[in-house]
Image 1 (cartoon, rainbow, N blue to C red):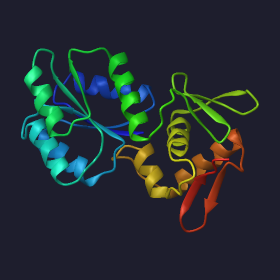
Image 2: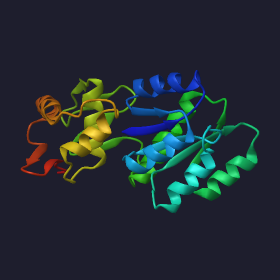
Image 3: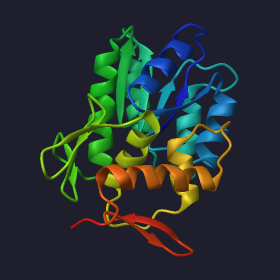
Image 4: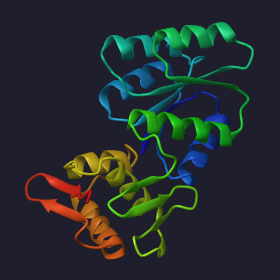
Length: 220
């Protein structure tokens, strides 16, 4: 899953980016409202974490512009713990959830998971499709035989995206956008190599190649 993190705190931003990466997310970090609005408009994200106190352009204005331009990406806003009016204004502007600072990483991860499950119309806690169960806490996949396999970071992100969009044809470009950060070289051959290794682990028949289109995880 690819997230946009808009946070100008020079300590919190990089630390949160690293924490989220360790939790299996691909993170693009921006430190001002102008860049945040541009990235959220021009790139495809699964969710956005938006601090309202951004320099250059306030987060509330950024969010208002996104929603006015029909950008429906789920947004969690970050506010000062006692700024209840900011939370109200953010929710009215189209935010999906909020979190007051300071916060615990575990709460942010839980809210992200809940938000992503709602946006994917997935009520259950576990991601289970095509005979696979994804253990998101341990970043492992459980096969239909009960065997547990450890995944690399890239394999985990790739499989989670496949499983979240089971039955849908996903282009190499889509997969690259949701597996790699924006400053990474999105070489289609690299995606092919990761898909090949993933097939070797979960079964080659589960991920089909659609010539000229991309790949699809068969939801049997």
